[in-house]
Image 1 (cartoon, rainbow, N blue to C red):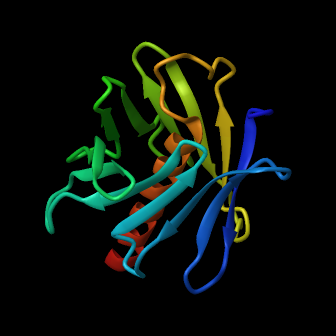
Image 2: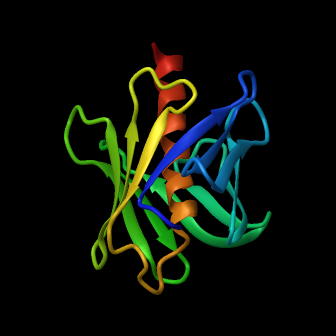
Length: 167
C-alpha cells in the first residue's frame, strides 16, 4: 500500500458492495451473499475470506479463508461496542470506539498499538467511510491490513442495520 489514507467506496444501490481504495488502486472488496448481510465475502490480495455466524442465535462469527478453512473468530462484547478478533496464528486485536459518541472505529492490538482507524463520513453515500492506517503498519505476523479494515467496515454496517431495524 502506497499511502496511509484510504476510502471505502459504496458501489450499487440495491445490493451494494464496498471497495477499499486510494483513488488509484482497489485493495479489497466486501460483498454479501444474501440481502440479510449474514454471510460476508472479503476479497483482497491475501485471498478470499468469508465471515459467517457460528450459530443461528450466537454472537460469535467465524473468519474463514475460502469457504471452510477456519483462521479466526470474531466476537462482539456483550454490553460494550467492542469487537474482539482472535486469529489462529496468535494475533489478537480489538475494534473499539474510543469515545462514547465517536464516529471513528479503531483497531487496537496490545503489542502493535493502534493499527487502523475507520471513520464514518457524514452524508457520505458514495464514500461512507475513510480508513487511516497507523504510520508503522508493516510489522511481521500481522494479517493483511486490507482484510482487517474490511472486517471493521462489516461490523459497522451490521450495527447500522441492527439500529435501523430496532428504530
